[in-house]
Length: 287
Length: 287
Image (cartoon, rainbow over all chains, first blue to last red):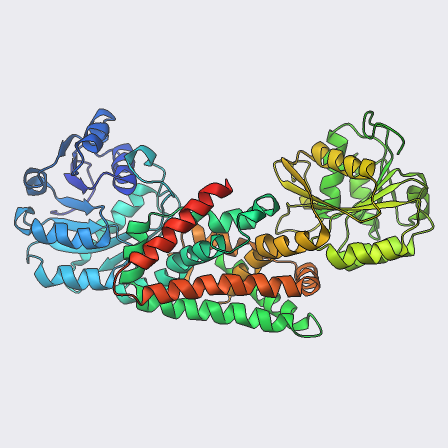
């Protein structure tokens, strides 16, 4: 990258995969003033849409040319495809370039990429904590990451300046909290804050009375089940890759449900109220 | 009430309890054109605020006078206080008046009120499915019930015209779906659509890593735990009054969590994806 990172906006950036997330990166970076943005996708239609919208300079189905000239490559694919893409295109990356990703699990992924990555290419994991229940570039927007949390998971080989560059990238997207964290901790925390909520949505909407309850819902039921409108290929993969952490966090959550069920059996509401007071205090600390 | 219900806006209405819900009824009814609205509260301050804001014509700490002249009484108290208030003031209600409430549980409440209510007073239960995580008249607003579900639970004694009047009341508040339902079904469905979501919020925020996960949250975690900012006196009472239904619905939910945990142990994601596809379809039917 040379010195200065994004001091000017001439950095050449390739975004791999122009779906909801990749498209939103392109739109946000274009809005932030970058003009040398290239797109790679297997779907010509997505590339054409991005080019027509003016958010990429040029689209490619063949990766060789854009990778060869890009200082920063943002891989916006599913976790296993991310590893496959980087491995398959290892020889095409520009010497000195930085590669980052958006995958929602990191532990196995970083280990795997670290095992085959070239010495002159630096991989720094990234995870923007934002999304939608819809897929594809048509739903992408420049503001998708505004105010979101952004997690950066360097590998052991990552240079500090590469980590700094990815941090700057998150700033350009408008993220409000940017945290550098180890891959193992990332996956353990994400299991609780992202994967468990999706399990909850799935389990709640799967309840026998869920559809009969249509006219009985308040906001809380609709809020919780919103993410049940899920992309099963992506989330099936995320869950399986993070299953050990997910099972552990689910057990902690299940213990909490069980404690409330037990409190319901008590003659007085005291125990229930104590659980509620404690929860209210913790929720207050979250904001 | 005589014929015609709300055909004109001269119906005298008393709202008992000017907190978040009672205050929002007053504001919404005032906005809908009613001018003969009285308020009863033990807190003089709430009455003064309501009167100063012009949303009630007059406030009372003594119930006798407003109840004696009101055609419609809306009791906006906690469930057990609702029963206590109606019982204690039984002799003050105007002959032919309709009494409704806002309580989130109905089964025991309707039975109890039916057991002592005068023959010339008609009680029709009501439950607006809206609220906030904040208490008091300061947070009340005319639009609180706009687009919300409204459940009406008549007793066996309720006259059809009284049910019609409460339906009209819900219309005046701007509710989008108004459903007449038996008290037992009400409580069973509410256990799933309202009480279980609150248990989920409490259990999730109570997890060991919840606060450490502060910078790891996406919208789903914040959405789910939002209602953990709970009024423990009200919700402790609601949970205890509905504990049998709540325990049963929680069991159904827990079975769903367990099914996903088991699917995580399979060598392929097929079972997980099948659960997700099914859930996605059900969530689509909810909208």
